Amino acid sequence: MTDVTSPTAAPPLAADALARHGIPAGEHLVRFIDASPTPFHAVATVIERLEAQGFSKLSEEDAWSVKPGGRHYVVRGESTILGFVVGRRSPALAGFRLIGAHTDSPTLRVKPRGSVRSAGHHLLGVEVYGGVILATWLDRDLSVAGRVHVDRGGLVESVRVDLERPIARISNLAIHLDRKINTEGLKLNEQRHLPPSIALDGNEAASTDVEGMVADALGVRAEAILGHDLVLYDTQGGALGGLHREFVYSPRLDNLASCFAATEALAGVGEPLDATVGAVLYDHEECGSRSAIGAGGSFLRDVLTRIALGHPEREDEVVQRAAARSFLLSADMAHAVHPNYADRHDPQHGPRLNRGVVIKHNANQSYATSGSTAADVRALCREVGYQAQEFVVRTDLPCGSTIGPIVSAGLGIRAVDVGAPMLSMHSCREACGTLDVHLAVETYRRVFR
Image (cartoon, rainbow, N blue to C red):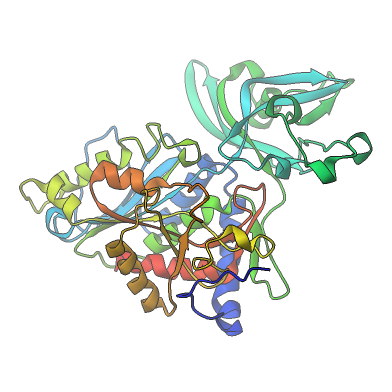
């Protein structure tokens, strides 16, 4: 097999570091992700963590009064959030120091009219969201969660919902009926093969559609549900695995692991810095960020402008001067070398698990990293005690992208793309290193120092 290495990567860290730091961090991450089956739930989980550290909510609809040391968060669309600590100095003089990530993950989304029937089964019509590895969703115990809009006597209320228990399954076709599956591969048609079974004919007295089940869970009539944003998710919770618990096995590591690390970094900010610091967690990255709540929208620009203009230390041309002094660390999970497909990596740029944060590079600006911003991250990693890893996609393969270039271009600020290494990206269940969770948190904390 090809031995792909990253020449700048540190040697494997000591086992005691895994036990003392990695395993507790991995367990904390698992609890965070288990509580966050959808972006709406993820934002609620982040809010709970921030409010425990003295952050208070600001509404975009209200006038703001920001003061140095103020700890606040702003939510748009219930699935995008920016938490921040106001700096001692005007952003014109000290800028913003930001970490960005995204709350969404590839999944199967329930269609507005989701009821389908076939061969005595009640099925759920679904639509593919993001770059899903479809086969990984088969033969899993699935549930439904998300947001519904309920008519409460003429007042429409938005409510998070999680059915929690397994109610759906997309079953594989038996090998006896598809003898070539192991030699020619599984080929799925999104329209015909992805609707999961949720009930059988013959129990019509009970709810046999997802809207009815959601209504039952909320204690309302089905007719009261006027709209929904519902997705499927795997009910199997995250776990630490491997002989020495060196792996995190979990759904939605891409990119809730980065949201977790960014939130922990922000929650740990004590006394305010000269600069205003913040963590922005966007929805809709997996489908291109082109929305009011995505990185291509105005959310971050609007909030940073209001902070800059509202800071009591008045300065001229504050927004433009603030941009020139600001920095964004875009945190999105990175591709670790797969031991069975090592040749899919560039031989000199092969990140490995449990060796720390990866800096992502792309000559065509799919990543926002420059030599200057990469140097900044390498310095942060050295402060933590390890050497940053590097990722460049093979020259003969296409490169994915992140929120980094979008935010950097929209705001005109310096940016870098990084992430903790992982395997099985965009699978229903993914894997990363437990020690990498700790190293990401510690590295991101240094962005706010």
